[in-house]
Image 1 (cartoon, rainbow, N blue to C red):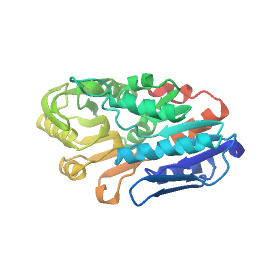
Image 2 (cartoon, helix red, strand yellow):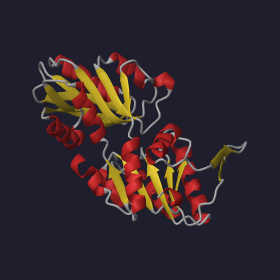
Image 3 (cartoon, rainbow, N blue to C red):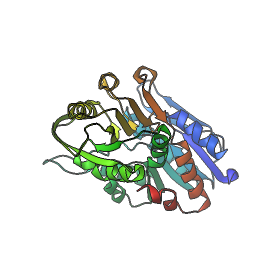
Image 4 (cartoon, helix red, strand yellow):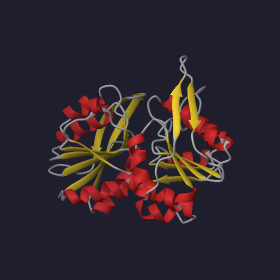
Length: 315
């Protein structure tokens, strides 16, 4: 396996790439990433990839445009160097919230990003917890949308929390919350939320019994932290006991960490699909590694084994 696999890391999350390579017992391949004085990105693959199975690990997080462009240039470099197959491993797929037209004269940005990734030369995409599952249909190449739930559920089980209710902060995340509730043998509640404009939300009602319960608020990502913090406040007002925050992608824009630290969470749990800067870390934030999930997916893809069986029980 090792002789024909090449793993390259973009600049978005080199620590995760290192963990994945350690899981696979394959060293990261040599690549040079620079910028010209005018800001243009420069990419140079510094070893032979002809006939090799190439995996490029790059989250398209802030700055999203720069990281997407870097990913595209690495794909193109590998393609022109005669790589046998190129898989874009995108732990966090940016622009996923723009997956449909919600008003006139706006783009479907997730479709645009999907187009440019596959047109540039990617043969396959691997990602974690897409914001909208239908984005898989924006691609005409295979897409493996792996769920982080095996990692997060295992951690929750080891915490031995009793009297649990899993809470979705909006109706859109109800299916995710229901699945986790089933795995934890817990109750389910949903918060009715209105979003008058992007990054602004208003809690309306809490649907379900949360009084005296230990609540786990689950979401796929936390951006500004406003929605999840308001949800925690609403649960406290309804008599909830301890409140935990569980999400996959720690975007943590602006003063999100400050909002989360003041929201009264017992613990905040996320994964390392996005690297959390030191200035964004807070005392009760637990970051779980998804390197084993992505590493196993890469191993199975490389060996021609089933990937769907890896996360069939996680849906």
